[in-house]
Length: 225
Picture: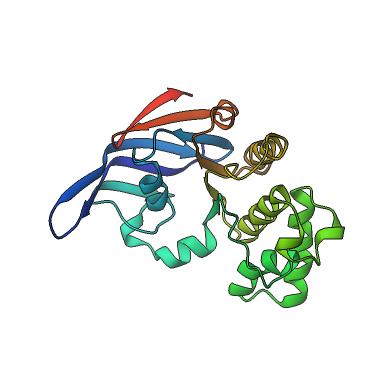
């Protein structure tokens, strides 16, 4: 077992001026390298809140979230997002004024990888996600949605971490591209040893996962795995 993330009784409460809202309650689970995890549930069930905690955008109100044995409250969360965990979004979130290659180079340049080396590595990542060199110099709006999502995945890989967090990654795609992205995420987990955590409403995406959790009113339960 190669456990990379462990949630122990994680709770999260939104506090406004007038009321408290419990978004997560007693969430306990593990995530290992080499597996795809799907978190399913209705809108407002707590899925996105949990993903934001896994991404280090906030810390639990109660319980512990451990990243490779370290409490997320005690690590540099900006560095964690830069070097260990990357989020893949439904809307791709590519930089519109950068080429495909430059988008993938971006996280490496944040780590001060020399430009020539970053460009070389970016092309290797783009090759891994199955994109031909004919798109490398194009701007994001010149390629399809499925291609844009593959660029986003390549950029997440270029960040250098082993944690890929995907928020409805197939939500804007047709069935053909959906299948391509699901297969790609599975390959990254099973062949490249990433931990892939997908928040989704899509049953087909969940069916392809190794482990499926359901979130309901902030409570997480195992469906399969």
